[in-house]
Length: 290
Image 1 (cartoon, rainbow, N blue to C red):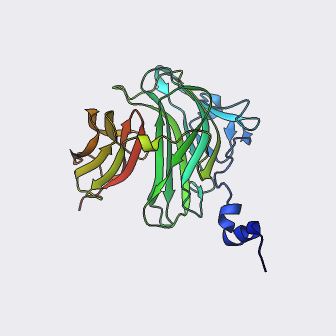
Image 2 (tube, one colour; image 1 turned 60 degrees about the horizontal axis):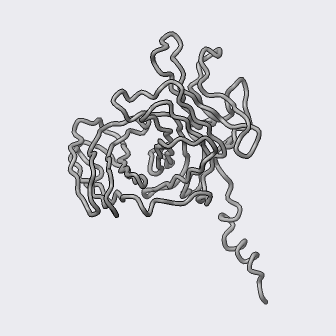
């Protein structure tokens, strides 16, 4: 008896066919008192300062979410930075699979050089330890909705919960984003990659290995470049704040090893980020002293 191909696929791959997006209120259609359901925002009580707001139209629905750097109430010279983080009744939201990508649509309007749209994803195991995730720092402005395909990487473990954090950061000397920078976010999903944009990771440098990992402080970072590139290597903590600048300069194509003493850093989990003009490569590194 011949089984129709579609029925065979449905029988063998039900998780692929019927997988649902686990991100809650992913298209930001649900709001109450200027707060999106299932998301934590940096808005202040009693509308004293709302730097996360609902905007219209959205990418695919009626609404999207806008985050803007505003003057801090009572201290107008200091930036009041928008922070958006996914929450439910517990920290993050449930996941039952090691989803390979986080995708979203965004607009970004930096008001000063160095401002970046920062997106971080963390995946936790049942014990609450981060064992997977990824992040992106986007500097290029976009007046229309652009697609972000953010690859997620994992160590050994069982996915249990995940969280998404979105903000605006600055890599300049002040490390403070400019008042007036803003983003618009919509249609966040965890799953496979979308194909509306070209994947340029094959053109970028590759961060191959960090040894030892975990480390008591001394690190050796191995990376490769496929062409002559302007290179930056930095460490970030899990909130997206820069923790250390490791290397900045122009290098020809080739394979490299960069030594770094992380002894001044506090114990914890960090993200090492290799950035070139062609793209970004990142790996997690843990600092742990005996």
